[in-house]
Every structure is written in structure tokens, then in C-alpha cells.
Amino acid sequence: MRCGLSLSAFIVDRDGVAVRVSERERPAEGTIDRLSQDRQDVDVTEVDVDRSVGYALKRAQHALHGAMDGELRDYGLSVSQYAALQILASRPRISNADLARDAFVSRQAMHQLLTGLQATGLVTAIGQGRSQRYALMAEGHTRLRTASSTVAAIEQRMIATLSRAEREQLHRQLSICATALDSH
Image 1 (cartoon, one colour):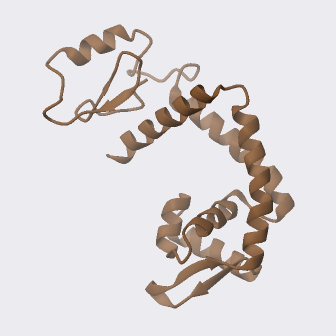
Image 2 (cartoon, rainbow, N blue to C red):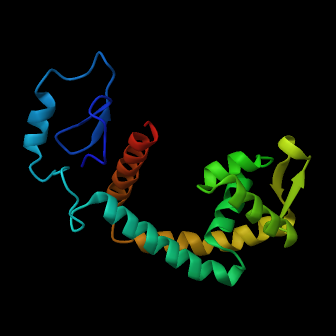
């Protein structure tokens, strides 16, 4: 499982886990080739959608988003609005730019989203211009609390067949993949 990793910063160990290495720890010439040969199921020259980690990840993300979208409508929220409320609950007085980055949307999209959340009384703005920060209002906390239990149930449904160790391993491996791509 290489997840598009740069071999200059990561190696794939015998279990298929990407491991970050420093310049001094970089394996000797040919070690990467031997590891790749040990992992005969890894082919990075072309994408086979039946075996692609990226495609499976996108399928899971699409299914999760669809399930969340359908359920969150009952609370008058979109998935992006829910994400913004979650972030605001954990990081009150966050800027639009930081909120957008954490919610994986553009600053312009977050501005529009926040305008809608303010209009419905879920979020308030403090300050003006670049110093403007956002926080949840009482109704925002209430709506988030009720919607969160539904989202938690959806996630539980998604991982119900995985053991605790498998869930922890999946989380760890997805984090490694994200870190590998974020570092470029």
C-alpha cells in the first residue's frame, strides 16, 4: 500500500505500512526494490479500480457523505455546515480562513456557509475584517449536539464489522496516507 508515497521520505515496511524516514535512516540502495518485490500485490504503474486504495477511499467517502447528507437534512444542515459547527465547537473564535482550511472548503465557500449559519442563528461573528472570528450560539450548540449523535450512529454503522484493532489500524493507515500527500 503506497498511497502515492515519495520514496525519498517514506518506505513501505513488510506489512505494507508507510514509514517516514529521515536522510540518515534512508535504506541502502536496493532495499526499496526488495520491499516492493516482497509486496507483489503492489502495482503503481496503473490504477486498477478493483484494487485501488484511492478509489476504495473515494467510494467510502462518497457513501459516508451521502449517508450524512440524507440524515443531516432532518436537522436543517448540510455536511459542510455540520463540519463547520463541529470545528467551531472545538475551536471557538476561529478565523474564516482557518475554518475553511479545517473544513476542506475555500475561504469564499466558507464565507457563504457562515453567512447562512449566522442568518439561522447558529453562529455569531465577533470583530471585523481580518480579525473577525466566529463562535457557536446557543442554538448552534443544541443543533450540533443532536446532529452529532446521528452522525456518530452513521460512522458506527460504517465500521460495525471491524474489530477495535482493525479500526485503529485503519485510522492509522489513513492518517499515514494523508500525511504522505500533505507533505508534498
